Image 1 (tube, rainbow, N blue to C red):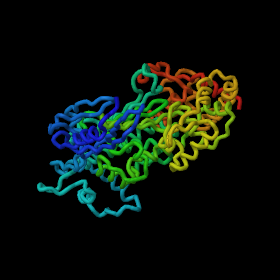
Image 2 (image 1 turned 180 degrees about the horizontal axis):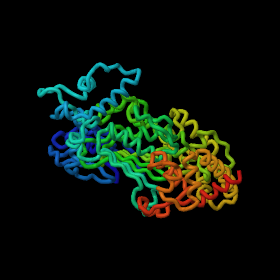
Image 3 (image 1 turned 90 degrees about the horizontal axis):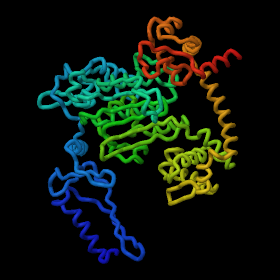
Length: 538
C-alpha cells in the first residue's frame, strides 16, 4: 500500500525512540525514503549502541534488556546482563584493587622474569634500582588505597600465586588441545595432546609456547633465560600474536567460560570469551583501539609481546598470507560476547587453482592471481575489505587490482565496492573436474608440486627423524627407539621428531585409536618406504 503521510510516520517513530521513559538511551537513527512501484517506503537504519550505553532496556527496568540474535530480539539472561554492564563500566575490570597482602600474593620468580625482559629493551626507562613492589607501583599494577597499597586484578592475573589467582579467576586461562586429524573428521576420537593452563599469565605464556613447540614445523631451541625462540618456525609470528591476543583480550570477569586453542592437522582455532569492542574491519587498521584489559595489554607491550596499535591481527594476517594460505577468518559475536580466530592451512593458490588458470589462458600479476583465487574459493560476492585482507594494499590499489580482473572478463563489479565471478568463468570453474584440459594441466601442476614438496620434506628432516624412519622398518616401541638413538629418556627433541614423522605420515602408530596405549609401537608407512627407496637409489 505504501505510506500516505511520510512526515507523520517518520516523526512518530523517531520521537518514540527518543523518549527516555521508554528507552534507556537516545537511539541514533538514519532514515531514508525510497519509492517502490510508485509507493513510498521508509527505511530506518539503527546502528549498534555504544558500549557505554549498553544494556539498552525498556520502560525504566533493566530486566527489560534485549539482545539481537539472528533475526529476533531475545531477553537478556542475568549472565548476559552482567557481561554488558562490565563492558560498559568506565573502570576496567583489570584495574580493580583487591584486599590481598602484597607481600604474599605474588610469585617473585615471575616478576623477576618480567623485569629481565623489560630491562632488556633499550626503549624502556630503567627501574633496575627499584624493589618489586615499587616496580609494580610505577606501572599502576599496585595502587594506593585507604587500607594501604593493594594489588590490582591485572597484577594477580599476571604474577599471582596460585591460591590468590583462583580467588580472582576460578577457571583455567586457556585450554590447549592438539588433534592429529583434520578439523572435519569428527569421529576420529579425542585430543592427542592437551595442556590446561590454570596459572598466571606469565606462566601460561611459557606453557602455551612450549605446547606450540611440540608441533611447530621446524624444530628449534628456546633460550631458558628469556623463554624466546632461537630458531623461528614459519608460523611463529601468526601463532605468537594469536596466543598473545587470547591472553590480553579475554574477558577475565567471565568466571565460567575459558579460552580454547584447538590445533588440527589442517587448521588452528583460537576461541575467546569476550568480544572485541571495535568492528572487525577496524581491528585491522593501524590505529589505537579501545581494549578490555588496558593494564594487561600495556604490561605485555612493555616487553614486546603486543603490537602498539591494538590487537596484533595485522601481523597475523600478514604472516599467514606470507605462507601462501587463505586469509584468517574472524568471528566477533557481540551478542554472545565471544571472539574467534581461525587459521586454515589451505593454500590460496592451490594446484587446482593454478590448473584452472592455465585452462582459461590468463596471465595475472601476483596480486591479481591471489585475488582471483580467493573469489574462486568463495564463489560469492567479495568487498573491498576482503581484498585488503588478501593483498594488503591501500583501498585505491585494491580497487585497481579488482578492476584489472573486470577488464579481463574474470570478475564483474556489482556495486562501487563489490565484485563477484563473471558468470561464464563461474560455470567453467564448477565444471572444472570434468574438463580434459584441466586434467592435463592438473597432472602437470601436481607432479611439479609433488616433487617440490617431496624435496622440501626430505631436506627438512633432522638427523633424529632420519634415524627413527630407518629404525621403524620393523615395529618399534618407544623404549626401543630411545635405545637406538642413545637417549635415556623421552627428550623434547625425541618427542618433536616422533610427532612430526606421524604428522607428515612417514611413520604410523600400530594402535592409532589409542595414542597413549602402553602397547603402542611405530612402523614405517608406505610413504616412508618410498622415501627409503629413494635414499637407497641416490
